[in-house]
Amino acid sequence: MSQTVPQPDPRRWKALIFIGLAQLMVVLDATVVNIALPSAQADLGISDANRQWVITAYALAFGGLLLFGGRIADLWGRRRTFIVGLTGFALASALGGAAANTAMLLGSRALQGLFGALLAPAALSLLAVMFTEAHERAKAFGIYGAIAGGGGAIGLILGGLLTEYMNWRWTFFVNIPFAAVAIAGAVLIIREPGGARNSNRLDIPGVLLVTSGLVSLVYGFTRAETDGWTSGITLGLFAAAVVLLASFVLVESKVKAPLLPLRVILNRNRGGAYLSLGLAVIGMFGLFLFLTYYMQKVLNYSPVLTGVAFLPMVAGMITGSTQIGARLMTRVPPRYLMAPGFLTASVGLLILTQIKVDSSYPALILPGLILMGLGMGTAFMPAMSLATLGVEPRDAGVASAMVNTSQQVGGAIGTALLATIANSAATAYAKAHHVGPTASPLAHAQTMVHSFSTAITWSFGILVLAALIAGLLINAGHQGTQPVVGEDGEVLDAIPVMAH
Image (cartoon, rainbow, N blue to C red):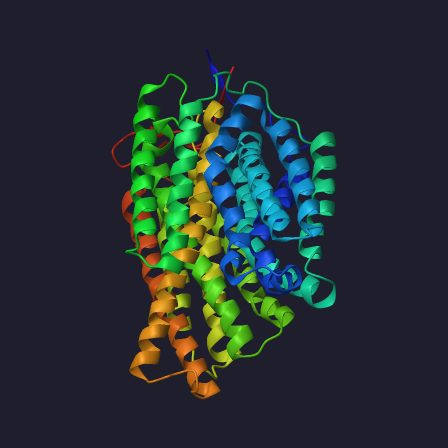
């Protein structure tokens, strides 16, 4: 069997437009509903206890089923999985927009998560098998990284515009035209390279163990926020997650056709990319969550103005990924982009820990957001490419799913973990400064700001840890046209090659 790089698909750049559009839709959906949530809650009479489930139902289904979705894409064909995922996502969005009660809304969110879990790994693995030349791969992943990173902030703007000028239901309906265009593009333009499919059977025990393990883990963090870290249900969920995920690893090491071949994650470069990406997303989600509340509740920004205030971060991200990351990726080893990128982003967070009740947007928030965007954009791009680098084509879907899993699980854990930290900080501050229900609005605002800056301080620490992991664990050479050689002399394929 000779290994050759096949001729690239002449329509691959057009295909990238539709793959990017699908990715934007999935990423948008993680945040677009956040801003619309208060309106939807009032309209449908959702209780405060059930409110977080609008976010969590999506995160649990998406994060829990991603590896399953990635393997389905490898077995069933990425293009077909991509089209099915888009169609299902559009139908689930229509159901959410038409929701008449809480159960219907929560069900539609879980369905969006399920089809998103098919769609996201299919999109990324199509990219990994269509762009095989190093410089093109760098450019394609730069564009994709900018969409993946900036989509969340665009979701905040879109959510604000739709909620303020139309109706919260449009935060769901907006997905339908996105999906329609992407489906048309997939049918007409996207062609999957031959020989990239995996012919093995599906590992059902692996699917059940990893899905229930990830759901227990994410749900454990969610319950910690409401019931506390030491409550019986929180500890029980964490214990279940450990047992289920340990069993999953054991099963994967024994079965003939594993859901997640351990070779995908035990490579120190890919493992380092998944770990540092997951940690970085925890820090980023924390920033979105607390800065959104800070701008709306303390600075009295409207939903639209809050979204617009995040735009410089999106601009920084796009610049970082397309101008810095993509240009340098083929010249310098990934850790020299990832570690400084995460550190730059952490400096942005460090600036944002200084927020006060009357902080100036241009003097304090703007530089913090720009640094955060630049750093994340620079680091995300080589991390995403490295995470699918040198993987055998039959594993491309599941390796892509691991990127999404580390981001989704990181986001869900980050939201719950940092919200718990913020709540504890607010309680401690109110007690120390005797801020009771009758205290002045200023005292309440100061308590809120203290809790936000405490949570952002933790986000800063988590990003520094992501930078350390990227700097110490990852040892791949640059992703140029020469073979990539690790420091231990192991040759790491620079370009995924198709076996013919």
